[in-house]
Amino acid sequence: MVANKAKAGNAHVYAVMRTDYEDSNDDEGRSNFISCHGSVSSANRGARAHVKDHCDIYSLEDPNSNESTYKDKTIGIKVMVNEEGYHSFEVGVHKEELHDGTVIPDEDPTDVVQEATTKKGKANA
Image (tube, rainbow, N blue to C red):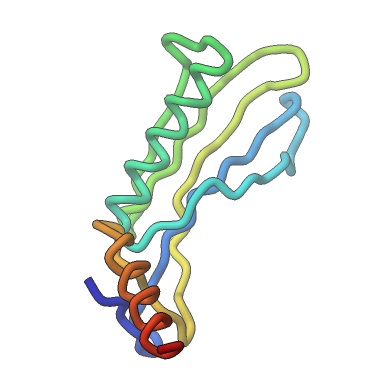
């Protein structure tokens, strides 16, 4: 698989972010970068998996949560934790335009790494 050079204005990446809120008056929260994906479907799966993993950490077996889907097919999930010092968290997928960069497909990025390693080896030969 070969990485594709992005053309201006048409390549995107999808960032999964989590924002933690200390209490019900916390309007800003603390944001955490979770992962970056080359497709919206991969990012949405990653967001759902992160919510499950994060709920497992806090032993939230049946969390009070709400999932929304937006017009660009990204999702947002809000989960109530209701513990002292940790009110809730939100996990969202954010679509970002990739400016003059390279998109590595989500399916099998090892092919790209192997190709880059092979090219580097040939350059040193």
